Amino acid sequence: MENAVSRRTFVKGAGVAAGMSAILPATVSAIADEAQPAAVELIDAASIADVREYDVVICGSGVCGLSAACKAAEEGLKVACIEKRDESSSGGFNYGFINTKALTEAGAETYDEEQFLSDLIVKNDGMGNPELYRNFIKASPVVGDWLVAMAEKYDNPVILSPSDSSYQIADHYSMYISYAEENGAEIIYNMPAIQLAMDGNVCTGVIAHDTVNDADVYFVAKKGVILATGGYVANNDYLRRFIPWLDPDAIDLDLPTAPLGALDGDAITMCEQFGLAIGPVPHTPEIGFLDGVEGILFVDGAGDRLPDHADMLNFDARTQIVMRRPGHMTFCITDSKEGYPEDIAPEDPNMVLADYDSFEAMTADFGFDPVRFTKTIADWNAMCDAGVDELYGLDVSLAMKLDTPPYHCKPSRGGWATVIGGPLVNGKLQVLGADLLPVQGLYAAGNSSSGFFGVNYPYTLKFGINLAYCATSGYLAASNIASL
Image: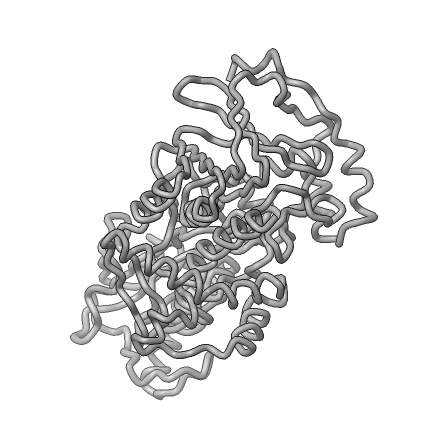
């Protein structure tokens, strides 16, 4: 942005950082102190010629941002939803709402709200904000049925799944966009938000860069700004900083539902320019691994059996387990015996099922420790003979020995679904400052905020809860602004 260089100013940030350690909890303070440079280069909003005034400015047009745009426009507010890319997108298809009319009438279970609150606290390691949980639980039926009605309005099919109390909405982005624009919202593409406009503890708007015309634009937000820029799976620096136990190089960045260029952690970058609070380490990764298959051996990079040959790849701590093992990935071991499944992994050109006449050759190719891998195979075969799992105590009735060459090894790296974390928010989704007090006029929701999830993504608590939270928190942020 060479056109903007001449009108930049420098604002000292050292004074903000110096007082943080006495105010913030240790985990938040450490992040905030680390984030503060000696000087932060800022754009002077007053010098920008292109000024556009709105009631609400929303940064990001994924599910969270579009839900916020729909609700804010529905409330009669003048809305701009700015998007850095040339189209709307974000990850996920399954909405895991609870107690919606549509799901209940289809036979889904009715959740006890107090029990679900307790489960959220426990499953999120006690790290979440119970006020956020309460607000999600109360709003879930409202927002869920609101989206169903919106889908019906535009003839978008809704696929209900009562067994896990979730649903998919066909072409949900077109639905959101149609509803938002019909109610007067403007969705503006190729317009990345690059800086907040701040007046003391008040956010007055957002500075964005028009990438088509190579010019800065000052979006004035008379009522509020909502950060809905999504996660940051494309930013390895943030991944290493906010999820220090994670090895991002061991995870495939293949996101057809959330293309690259939209997942850089812009909400974090903009908030740290002003020393605002970022959620404590670690943030929450959602990573998919090859699903476990009953009776099949999975090993780590050293050749040691992973805990639970069938289920460990389907439960909440799977990422932690794999990332704390050698190789940071899984390897599925089978042989040519009749009965072994041939389709143990999805079709993927990067996951070739290699054939070996001996385990020694497999060991050499994949770098397993020969002593440990040999023991793993021997222990597996002995377990199959005995019908007793002396290591993990699992049901091994379907497990089969590995004794019929050629033997097969299918390596499986993790694949990103999303990462959840960003500015720290209170129960009203207001971003908190260095003193942990709310910044007036600034909200963050969905994956670009911290406060709802813990260390592990709670797969076993509620299928599709992340997308439901994105839609609900965007809706609630807009509602909170409209109520002012």
